[in-house]
Image 1 (cartoon, rainbow, N blue to C red):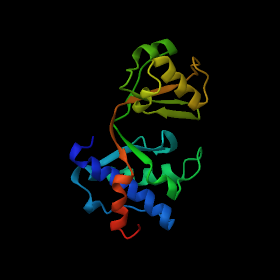
Image 2: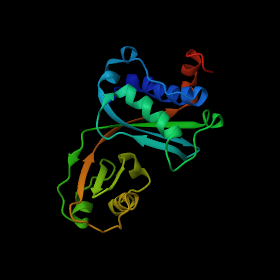
Image 3: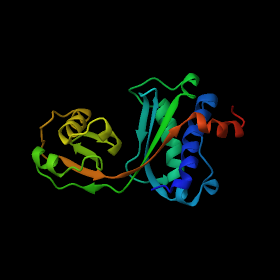
Length: 200
């Protein structure tokens, strides 16, 4: 997870990545040597962007591949421009945009064998869940509990996202859970970082 003293740096990476992509059309990757030590360690993140509560995009990785700061930057740009459910972020979104970074812990297999057993095992407000069944796959972050406070509504939303009917339990279904640290804040506070890159 990210120490509190590096929360601002994490959000600045996300915002800078979005601004660079918006204004140049090119991806931006921070220099690893410039990152604080906790952001140089491998990490898996999801970046969620909202404006006035409305979703602008959400993209992430489930398994660490790159330094955490690099993962944040890549996923922020992907959330802004590559989420197939939503239109791309535009300049007018920047000042009002809210950035939420979830830093995922390790995936933990969840050994349950039916719908009711899963509802009893999942930890409200704590667990993110990953479900896989044949070619179907979906995840919900722990932060989603704020909108779906009961296990049945949370798990039903996950099932629907994966293309499954709530209560359905296909043969070979696999479940993992994970916890996440959260970092969030206003994009406007960090737009000066893009200015220092000569982009504002």
